[in-house]
Length: 408
Ligand SMILES: [Zn+2]
Image 1 (spheres, rainbow, N blue to C red):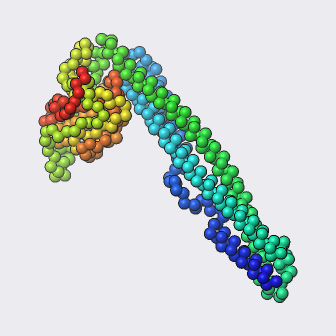
Image 2 (spheres, rainbow, N blue to C red):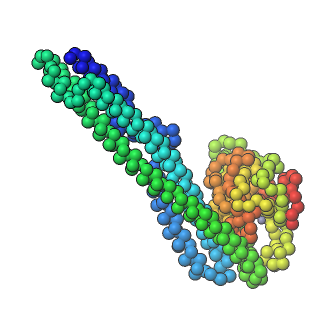
Image 3 (cartoon, helix red, strand yellow):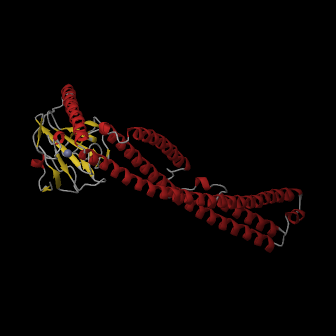
């Protein structure tokens, strides 16, 4: 008689102990190997951002359609095309982030499912084990145990054990049911995530095709304008005017920077030379500094830097010398461009990039990434336009580009 009670108690304790080690419904507290950083709401946020991008793009596209074939406003059209391209690039980055989010969530869900299944198998084994113990003890119901009480206190003690056991059994069944539900929900969620990731991947491919087409159209537009003498003259007149205005702005910002440095008692002097290449992929110079014969009167005046070709749309552009970023913006002619001051009168300028990764006021070290090559602004294909000024005057960058290959 006593034996039965002890066995029950021992079994119940063992089970409770195990249960305690593996508390029901604690899947939330499980330490996941993958980062908890990603959640469904992150993907939803990205989708919201995406909607805004689409709206912005519609606006650009309506402006573009109003200016279609308007050669007098070529520079404005090109600017809009660049904005459209930039929005497509952001859509691509957004879609890539969504895919990464889906993948992180999928990995997380797969891990949780595996954990849940393992836990389910474990709890089910425990439940079976308990049923077996009950059978061996020769009792099929709790009431039998109670009827075997030898005294009132024995009964109370048995009652509390039985209550515990009954609660426990009910708890095990509930947690097993709960786990099953969780597993089924997660399996459904997993399917949703897979579908979401698949859709995003298809969209990514489509966006990449869009991007190629838009870049092609933007380059084509400049090519067409250059073939039209009158339109080309107007385009280059506007381009020259803008570049001249930018030159004035740079001078002003250089003076401001010099004043700030003086106020902070920082020695801000410049020494000539000391530049590295602005990128490390190509050594091909497709257009040198100075006059160039394009056959277009307005265009053949003066090239203020060199063009480095063979850089495509994905090459990292670096600061050729340590300094302070004094300009980082988009202009119609230079496209996405950055100017770095290396001391009074000494600047470097990097133009036609796809994107910029520094902002005005940033202190950059030599070789630090400042953007990605591209074909924004008045440009007919991916290249990096690079200028150097020393003592306030433009100097020939070729002097500082050892090993360059003449490709003009
Ligand atoms: Zn150039």
